[in-house]
Image 1 (tube, rainbow, N blue to C red):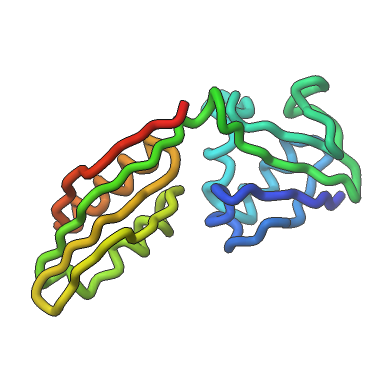
Image 2 (cartoon, rainbow, N blue to C red):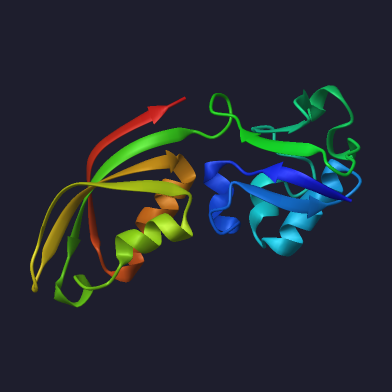
Length: 172
């Protein structure tokens, strides 16, 4: 049976930026499995290694929180709406970081910042920049989960980009 699933912005990179998708299943757990078969990688963002929905991911079936019901075993029927809502407080440690990225000649033409936003669940915002054919620097603001920001910055370093901190603020 087909249900409508509302996908939050941090997970849309798995669904081709679609905010609403269709999935199959008789329970929320089966719907999550259906999502994973259509959109590989989405399940690991929602479910822990034991198969339980992560404590900072809220799931609602027709506006009812499944935590007040049967959790993953909550029944769904054709036409139901399943909303996935990441908790801001008490879950992900949200951060906003400003860094200065310095690109040598070989990297000036590579889309490193674009790839950071595409591969990791972060939002990038160029605050200042000076780029020419030989060298470039960018002051970049990165917002998102603290662990995702770390991964994105490590990716940049692995590509050969020099990363220097400018500011850090963590929102608990």
